[in-house]
Image (cartoon, rainbow, N blue to C red):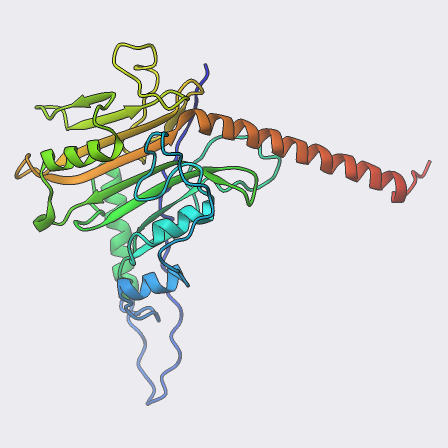
Length: 329
């Protein structure tokens, strides 16, 4: 098998709320606190305030030192984020896409590589900041119980609101030199800003190519999807060719990706129609992955990490030979 598969669903970490003991009142002695009504010390914080605190000093538009994509190469970016950018360049470009976007740098999963104890940043996600509401301990407990019941019933909870977007970026490389190998974005349109299916498909063709490798129209059990697959030389993969069934991605960036050294850039797009009007789009999912480049990137990273570990061990042996304590026999 020539493919490497890994999941790049970079989910937000679960925040566990706790209650601190409140400072003693300065006025007359208060009566005993009743269980379930102790309010957390944190006050309600707006989404804008949360974003400002989490984003830090962000300078927009983002600046990149990575060379621009060659003019003859296939289009491989999502709003400027593309394979080859450094981790920092991609993070800055994502944050500049919207003032409410905040990063989560803790990937839930990644490629299973031999890291030799080194920490390789395998990507990040970004989503809109949310208002932080002060809650009583009773409210926190009730929410935890509702969440547990929903998970037990396999219920779907919609936490992606109209007008929001979220990002998933996969990176690979030796520590401090990681670069992007995949990028995905999901956008949900506000009710009064939903584009038509035809208009959005036309916009996608204009950006990624007038002739997709594969395009499926909407049907009873099918949503509109488009794919632009390329070989390593940048040529579009046509239907009926050997690579047609091999150079395949997935439009949902939360799904794991496959890397095939025989493929180049693969772009997948999915249009999710509105339930009340299937001619309008509720959300758009676009993912881009450089399959061959990502495959080689992982191999090069593992090789570099192995060499660095070998050098470390050799230096330790050399140092021990010079300064190590002799055995007691």
